[in-house]
Amino acid sequence: MKFREHRLDNGLEIIAECNPAAYSAALGFFVKTGSRDESDEMSGISHFLEHMAFKGTPTRTAADVNRELDELGANGNAFTSEEQTVYFISVLPEYQDGAIDLLCDIMRPSLRDDDFEMEKHVILEEIAKYDDQPPFGAHEKSMAVHFRDHPLARSVLGTLASVSKLTPAQMRSYFEVQYAPNNMTLAAAGNVDFAKLIRLAEEKCGAWKPRPVERLTPPAGDNTDFELVPNDVASLQYVIQIANGPSATDPCRHAARVLSTVLGDDSGSRLFWKLIDSGRAECAVLGSYEYQEAGIFTSMLSGAPEDTAENLQIMMDTLREVEADGITSDELVQAQNKICSHIVLQSERPMNRLFSLGENWLQRRQYTPVAEMMEDYREVTCQDVQEVLEKHPLTRHSTVSVGPLRQLDRPA
Image (tube, rainbow, N blue to C red; front, side, top):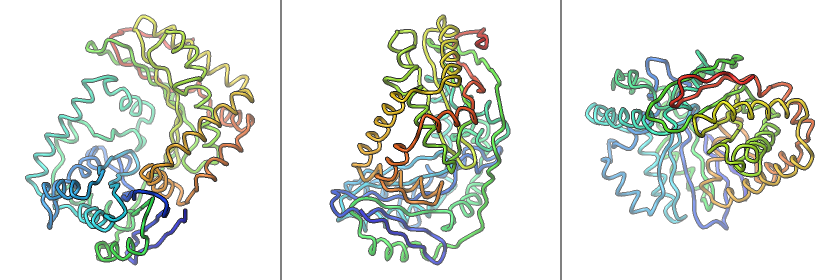
């Protein structure tokens, strides 16, 4: 495999991990915009724009877009997160040109008023749907509670109030700035013809106008709030706890993932043996997540309402135990093996390499081969994990619980 990179005069970056032995090619635009780049009044507009990109362009109708995806035999879609919006296609190598032509075109959608109003109803239904089904918006509520007035507190979907008030003019203005070529990366992985990729990108994207784009990246505050949100529809009680962790550029991020695997992997972790294998809870996991200049450890617990207080106490005792004693060498090796196996298995598909490639570039502006990723985790020591715990104590977390309970005390 060979890494290639190129920059157009307008700032659009093109990167690729070329693997002639692969049977497919994955291609995608990574736009450096998400919910953290919005204002409170325009909350949800990044996700709204993702929908609008598939509603047609000056040269293609929405039906044309869907038809061409089928004709290419493509697996295509998009998603929006706190920090990026990604449009991706996976195709056989011989259809690379057609896939790029389509992707480049939908990056300049028509954004028609009629389509906007119709799609607004779709998104409002989506927001209501997520709030009406398990875990009943618990993640969004926990991010809002933990981050407070920080940009990462905003929901990716937005709120019913904010989305209802959005206008086509606001969307067009937001699009012109955030979808500037200097705020986007065209990435590819698998059996990719890089020379052709550059030529077609120059032809289709070279006239796009660059603009100054700014992202606010304030540090996250310390938060130990405890909030109970009653919900009579729920049969289980859901609890999400968030503690601050290493950011996307913090060298400690590898040790943080090792720690979260030891504590909260969905099999063979401390929380698994104490709460899942014992039958006490339905779900008990903990993971680490990285953002620009901020990071978090997030745990999720769900189970019978009457068992929630006791299970929360078990979780707190488990966190105190690891803060006091750290992890063992056996736990370290097991976590490293799990993580490295996951990296290798995921990397066998060009589509997964595409996501890793694009995210690494947006967050850290670096290319990391699979072997180097594995080595980064193999080099983590028990002392590294202990240093993460000292810098980011897991017991200093915010808590949000959603479910039928009307009273739930903070663990002792």
